[in-house]
Image (cartoon, rainbow, N blue to C red):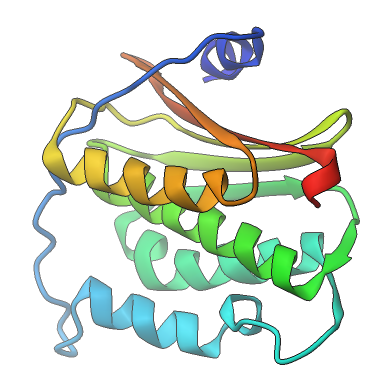
Length: 184
């Protein structure tokens, strides 16, 4: 996985990965399917609620909330370990919410469109530009579901003036979102 992230860090490279169609997950014993579980978790996650006015939010705290919601609704029952790393960073509420939505989409994309995923890592950092990397250890191949997921994320990122780079090999998949620091 580290080699994937390293390759994405190289300047001016644009990679595309593919993923297999999502596996069908049997309904849970309590009658909820994974989409319903995710909707309930998202509803309870304050970081996935858009701000109601001008406010500041801590991105590290918000990303931890999003990851906890996705872990409880999508990953725990499937035995997928999740790790998140983000230095303390305060942003406007609107931008924090946008980043959280993008990360949620990327996590769900990794969990649903890769096969044999055992772990997913999310790292967010800011230097000359803001970078968010979502890496998984699953096996991915191109599909219509994969394309739709990346196109949706690409549109959200493009609205912030950023870009999405993707890479995959037999050791896993990595998606890096790059946004100019000035856009934060």
